[in-house]
Image (cartoon, rainbow, N blue to C red; front, top):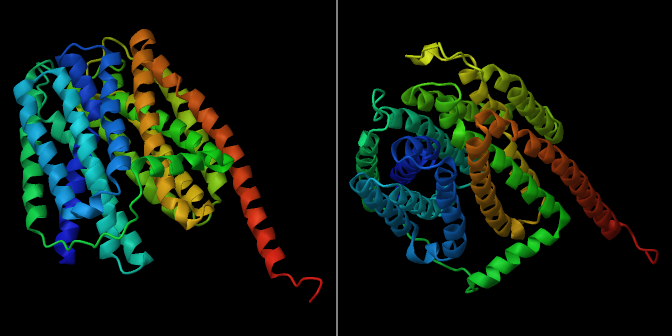
Amino acid sequence: MNRMLTIIAISLCYFVFAVLLNSVGTVILQSITTFDVSKTDASTLEGFKDLSIAFVSFFIASFIPRIGYQVALCLGLVLVAVVCLLTPLFAEFYFIKVLFAAIGTAFALVKISVYSLIGQLSSNTKTHSSLMNTVEGIFMVGVLSGYWIFSGFIDPNDPASLAWLNVYYLLGGMITIAAIFVYFVPIEREPFTGAQTGALSEFLDMLKLTYQPLVLMFVISVFLYVLVEQGIGSWLPTFNREVLGLPVDISIQLTSIFAAMIAIGRLLAGFLLRFVPWYIFINGCLVMMFLTILLTLPMTQVSESQVVTGIFDAPLAAYLLPAIGLFMAPIYPLINSVVLSALPNKQHAKMTGLIVIFSALGGTFGSILTGVIFEKFGGQHAFYMSLIPIVMIMFSLFIFKKLSANRRSTLVKGCLLYTSPSPRD
């Protein structure tokens, strides 16, 4: 296996899927504008994407090693390339749902394959961590690029025009190039040695983990966190457009600040966590998220006479609100790391499955809930409602920390009892 060519191949896959996966906020805004759908209907796009990732990840994870990672990558890329190229031809909202279902299905194939290949390409923990960070960094570059790629196809003079759908010709072409590259890269097939267990048995074993109070509080925290992140991230372009009154293209471009802040926040967290305990750090982030929403939303009362023609004409609130991503960024990977380190290695795979499923459920519910509140009561009320799950996360993490500490204490006592001389000695 040529290591460098394989790294380029998986990086290309991650880049194009970063653009597609994180376009949901942009597409929600454009679907409302172009297809005249309600906010409630538009919010279901998050579900088509996230639930597809969750279901496909679980049911085919054990099957992918049997067909080979190269085949799985090519299948995922070809599926999305075909649907992308068909999207401008159908130009209907129902087909946008099909598109996001295909994106979620394909990303499940790609993510499992990429993570497995990273393991094959790494000789030790250090090289694995380095390569993982490189690939995830390229993913964030794709996220940032996506907002600007989509905004470039939107006609600011006629935002309701179907011309924005032509972006999928470009994306379909990019994905086709990635598929051809992956096809010709010499990726060795790893021999499959997994156990022949049924999907239902694996699913039940995974759900049994939630009987542990530690795991239950963790999945509640994950669900609530992703609910907040997707609720804000998916609806920020629409908030910029309808509450701040910004042009469509500028509304989308300014949302890229949110992705940039998440990238910066995760880089800073990696450094700060060397000196600050995780529980204090994560609560500090939650408090800052709470304050950002509480202090910024009153500033979104924009005068109707204010005219925005460029990105630098936007009101201060348009820059401050996406900055919440800076404080939001470290929470998800940090709580994942804490729970995985508290569990035995043999339970990590099942725990990862729970993370994917509850993340998908939280993202779907968050987007739909925000969309419903946005439609019924307005964007400000929808974003104010995110204060409730933020407080709930603080409470669930408090219980989680106590359970985690009790678990470590039990393990230590068990080790001491095991190593202490018996009375007979």
